Image: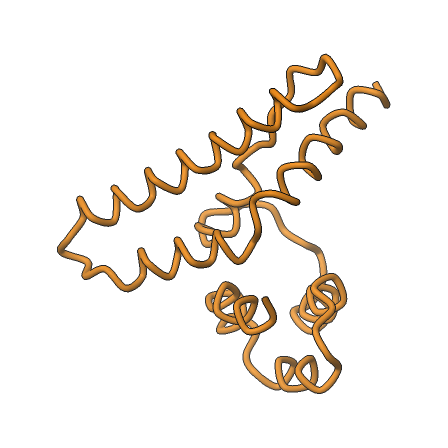
Amino acid sequence: MDTEEDEIDECSLAISKEFKFSLLCEYLQCIKNVPKQAKTSRRRIFTSLLEKWSSYNRSQSQTTESTSNYTASFYPALRLIINAYDNRKFNMKSKKLIAKVCKVLLIPDETKKELLKIDSTVILQNFCFISQLFT
């Protein structure tokens, strides 16, 4: 079981090296900038995002030396995109969650202090914008 989990982690790590979080944020920013009436344009941008993710998965599976059949799941990215529909809870208060996210993203202390002052719901909704500041 551990080797199976290790292979999944290895595949996820490999795709995260290629498919940067900032690229995901760029796509989401494009979708945000499209007027709500232009649903086909939004759908086309999102489809392009999924195609790019799939192409990274395919290229990674072709270059991987192991015989694993695992591909990196789009599920974590989807949880970021539509977090209002996510039923999982973090079991921590917003300030602790903000502190952990800042630690993982290596955000400077002064910025972390500013973020802690802001309402956590605003931070989570604008998470992509914040990450673009440091990429």
